[in-house]
Length: 507
Image (cartoon, rainbow, N blue to C red):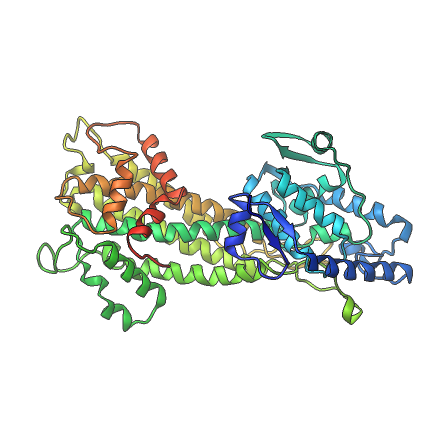
């Protein structure tokens, strides 16, 4: 099996997806050992000389003025993990745990954290052997690092906590016995280096970015199918219009729509059925495009964070410095997650309004709720209800987390980002967006049944894909099953991949 070599310098979204979602094994590049050993040697030098250095010979947070004897260094690190592992709530998904492990490894191998290679190698083993720490979903402020979740992630290194292994949630030592492993004893600085950082936030946000990329393209495809179902006017996609405004996402979306609708006989001309379309059709480039521009901004923030060093203190052996700072503060990710939450909630907002136009006979000119036996059959009446419910939920979830701050650690840590919850709820918004788009996808395909079915080059592929899983509606059936099938098509990325093989669609 192909493996990915980590050198600490250039982790990409593609690498992340291959390792975290497709579970490719990883290996550390030889040069990272040189960097890790150099920073570890400087930590040992500080210990030998009896220097007072935060996190190495002192307590943590408000206890930073408490000097700890060198002989208690290992006990201090174990105590740190145990005392900080106080997260609550349901365990986070395994993919998010895998992302946390990968991003923590990536930060540590850059050689500024003072940990021994053996500690990092254990994290690598966790990923490669499929042993995943059980990490509760609640309890991080996203400021002094994701302290609680990262502590739960680190507990299994010393043989504590629980893990997911071979499909079961079991005590760590039970998994160790099966693997023939022994727990490690952490030395000075190592516990702190494991739990100071933004990897809980970073893992959630990276997974959201990967999914948002897929859904933003899917929204263009589904929106184009709805345009055909409602005989929309593609003049609104003319590149002349979008060139004079100059917004990149808008220009790209309009180009996508024109390629999707190429050769379609279902669209109309201005004045043929109506002079102009409602905003949900006419302004797809402006709305989808603005969300795409927001996406690119957020992706640029996280792209840097993939290769960031975010613990504290940081060790610079060449400069003979140990610097205490605040790279663990989650503000960059908190603001980015809030922005992406709003941007993606808007994709669901406009999709639900397109669904309403599809099922409402006063707006569509089609049979009410897309059934020919209205009264006996309800057709897709309640699909719009479900979409409206999800959109309403997103409006609450899209309220920014980053505008809140509750001081902690006896006011030593007196500004926090709340980015952990911000990234987590952004993840939930994406799940809702996917379902809303799935509902529009189903309704658009059904509305197509009442036309000539002479679809565009890209939309034909989209229609055929859905019909391979969901037949035309001839009578009422259990709606949640169809919605689940359409949702799975979107989650699998089949829609974007199949259409993308036929025509060029870009973000």
